[in-house]
Length: 224
Image (tube, rainbow, N blue to C red; front, side, top):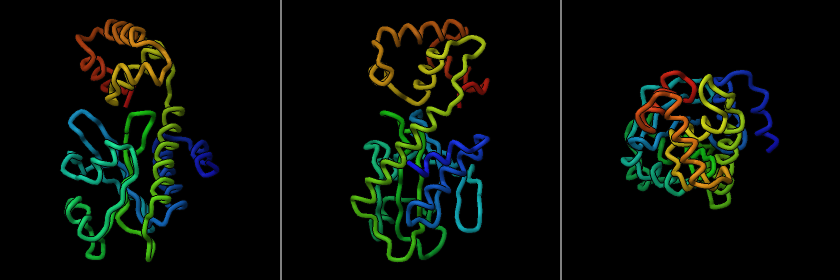
């Protein structure tokens, strides 16, 4: 928690993303950290940046259907950190993650807010003789949840020219793939109220349906 507080000192969104990985590397025996955003629409994982001892590398060219990567897919489905090594590593990953011949293990940390995974961190290089046991994986899972909670709290939820704060919150959750039932539970309102927020947001945006409304907000940069 003391390390998470450091994230509040960041001035920009880009600096915030870098700080998430910097704190991660300072807490765990990891020598690199890849940050990905995740969309349940198409099960798409998209590279954002990678940090290691030499600096920052932008990895926007990496795009994966996570269903082809069992370790990442299971981490997202279960919302728990996962680790594999040896033969299991070769079975559960792709050659694009094997950058050097000495890489034979991977950890995946889902970044969660409530029941929604919005991204994940991958590590393929560890300190010497590192083995992640259940206690370490539990700590990694907690880190992903704390980061997700921080990201949600720090998002600019000011009212857009058209939408109220609640309407915007609902539309953002829809873009993350959260169901009506899940939204009602996390927002502590009824499903009927959620549906009313969705309906009014669609009307204000002049959209035809929920997907169209989310697309409008993405294009305007109101949500990301």
